[in-house]
Length: 481
Image (tube, rainbow, N blue to C red; front, side, top):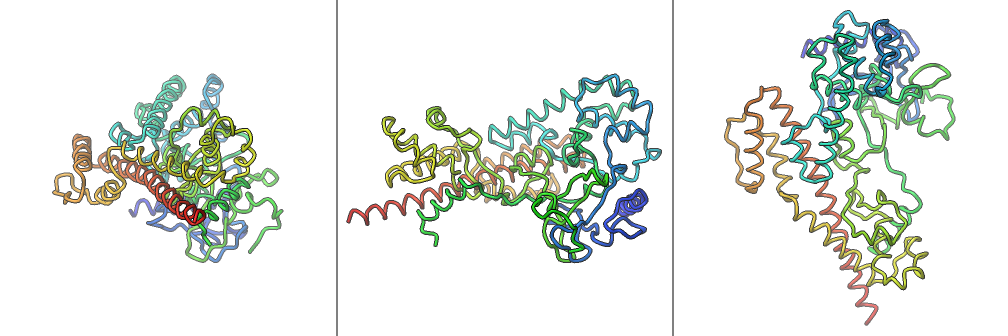
């Protein structure tokens, strides 16, 4: 712990010396005026907190271009690396940056970047690092396949980059697949976008910001959908001188070419001590797990796709990716529209198409049929999975209690399937060291939490559809009377 704190302080001192700052004044540390490194146990661990009250849109951190780690900035400082890269143009920018990172790690304390490199995480939990047990724990075919594809992609990239790593004479431990996974995970989870390199850049201090899901601004279609469905259910600043219309720049950050600096702005107003967060894209929980190694409870951008009959796709013009269930459990505007049209007799579809694409209900009977169909489909998906939503909720709590693999654990509340899964986990890690077992447990926990959030969306959708059907049934009866 003390060593980690010492490394952090050396990083902040080094960062100040190379021009990284949260203030225009000179400081011994690059932080202290606007930001401070703090620990947030419930939201990302180590991160950046407000050192004072911050105003939305205020510039809170500046990182000069010379401090950004890219394949270009690394090769400019090393002729051997530069010459080697010139002979391997077939590699992708991400592969090149991964090799450069491993090459720089091999320099140890002689690396100019050493104060930054020693503060990087020792391991990550992105999907590509999941073992077979953790992959199967995801349960859902699409998620398992995403994990398998991520691992296969990492293996292919590693094999293709081997020639370059051998030419650079990297140490054997830095040429292993495990080392490659670490480097590619570092790039996947920590790089920031820059206009001149598709691989992005590693940004000292700037990559201490933890993630906040951007609030979704509903489209006109989605707004109409929600308004329609609500009717059905009767649900009654040191401020910068910048163009306010450029809200993305105001509330996030980016590289500013005119001053050759990566600038970070407060995404909202913060009180002193609150964690300052960065929104760096709209991701589902599976995408967060794939690229960053974490997920969010109540992620507003999460969604579930349910299998649809081929005729549903062919009867509408909506793209497949728009046909999903929201994190709230509500069917998307496009999914409802597609199903309303599909539930209409073929010879009537042309005449009602304009109503469907306007987000309007066609009839009470049509709406009840659609909602019942969605509810049954969600129920069928839940029943096809090995464990229930309640099983996973209990298992998620039990995982945190598995500290000693040999100690007894109270499992009476868990289903036999969950008990079997715990036994399988113990068997899976019994041959591994303590550190490996901890990593496996964390990835298993993430897999269970992911499938729990997936099932919650389906459970909430069933409740939403059933409540809507009940309301429409009583409404229809009252009209007939």
